[in-house]
Amino acid sequence: MNPVQTTTIHRAAWVFPMTGPAIQDGAVAVANDRIQDVGPWREVLRRRASTSCRQVDHGRAALLPGLVNVHTHLDWSFLQRRMPDEPLGFPAWVQGLLAERQGLEPEMRQRARDLGRRELEATGTAVYADVLNPPLDGTGTPGDAFPVEVRFVEVLGFHLAGLEEADRTGMEEGATIRDEVSSWGLSRRETLAAHSLYAASPPLIREAKEWTRRRGLPFSIHVAEHPEELEFVDRGSGFCRTLLESLGRWNSRWRPFGTSPVKALESLGVLDGASILVHAVFVDDDDWDRLAKAGVVVCFCPRSNRFISGGQPAIQQAWSRGVRACLATDSRASNEDLNLFKEAVYVLSHMGDPGPERLLSMITLNGARALGVEGRWGRLGPGAAAAFLRVGLEGAVSRQRDVAEAVVHRGAEGHVQWVKGGCGA
Image 1 (tube, one colour):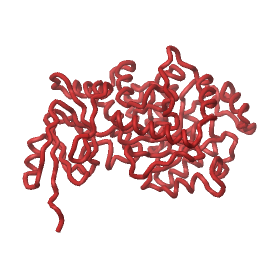
Image 2 (tube, one colour):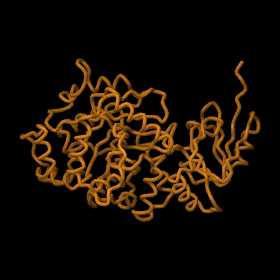
Image 3 (cartoon, rainbow, N blue to C red):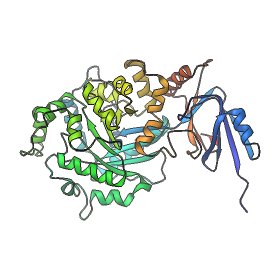
Image 4 (cartoon, rainbow, N blue to C red):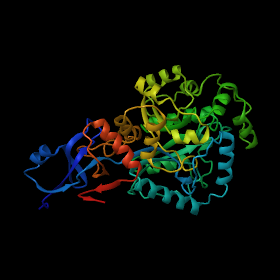
C-alpha cells in the first residue's frame, strides 16, 4: 500500500512562475520533490483540498526558480579578483591567465571547482554550465550533485585539422574527448564547445558543432568578445596571430574570413537554435539581424566584458529583435564573483532599463531553455524540481515591475534562502 502523499503549500506575497505573470499572494504546492501546482494561494488551497496538506507561510517574500548560469569556468574559482579601475585589455589579461594555468594541478582544480559550486549555491544558482578543457583530471562531479552541472568540454587547437585530431589532445592514452562525452550522455548533461574563431580552426569548429547537432545537444562558443578578435577574423593580423605563433599553434594555410565573427560563424554553419554565442560585445546591426533570424541564444557577461575590454554588449539591440538572450557571470578570472543577481544589478545600473522582469527571465527560464533543462529548472510549475528560492522583501510593493526590481536588488544583497522539498533551507 502506498503511503499517503503529503503536500506542502508554500505561500508568499509574490510568486514568479517565469512562464507567466507574477502572482500576488501566490502559492507553490510541492509533493515528492516535485512542484504539483502554482497559482493564487486560495485557488491552490482549494484545488488541494482533498489531499493531506501542510502550509508554510513565507510572508513578505518572493518565491522564484533557482537561477541558471549559462557560462562559467569553475577551474578559476580560486582566484580573488576585483574589478580594475580601467579594463586590463585582452593581451594583458590572457597572458596573465596563461601564467596562472601552468600551476593548475588536478588537486587544485578540484578544490577550485568545489569552491565555485559552493558559491553558486549560496548565491541562488540551481544550474550552471561549466566550460572546461582537457585533460579532465580533477574535474569530477557526482551526477546527482547540486547545483546541477551542464558540462561543456571545450575543444581547442587553431593548428588542428579537425575534431578527429583534437579528440585525443590532452586525454589519457586510449581515451578521446568524444568517448568521454558519449559515456556520460544526456543523463549526465555533457556536450562539446569550441573556444573561439582565434583558438580553434574552422574545421574543428564546424565538426564539433555538427557532432552536437546530430545528438540534439547545445553547443557553445565565445564570439566578438574583444577588438583583437575582430581584427584577427577580418584581416588575420594583430595580437591573436602573434599569440598563436608564440604558442606554436599558427596554421600558415589559414586565410582570414574578411568579415565579422558572426558572419564567419554563419559561414561555418554554427548559427542555429542550439548554439549559445557567449559575449557578443562587438556586433553591428546586420549581425544582430542574422542572429535573430537564426534563432541562436546569446549569453551576455557584461561584468567580464568591463573587466577585460571595457566594451559592453548592446543588450537592447538583442531585445528589440527578439533574440533569445540570457545572462551569465563568466569566471572569477574576469569577475569578482559568480553571483547572477549581482550581474543583473549591473545591467540595471549601467545598461539602460530593460525591465527587471525580463532580467529575471534571463537568469532563470531563458537559461534553462538554452541548456535544455527547462523541464525541471528555470520555472515554477507542475513537474519542476522542488528546489527554489525565497527572496525576502522590504516595504510595501504592489506593482510587478517594482517587485521584480526589488527581487534583483535584494538577491544581490544576499537575502536569499533555498526552499527544498517541504522545507526552507
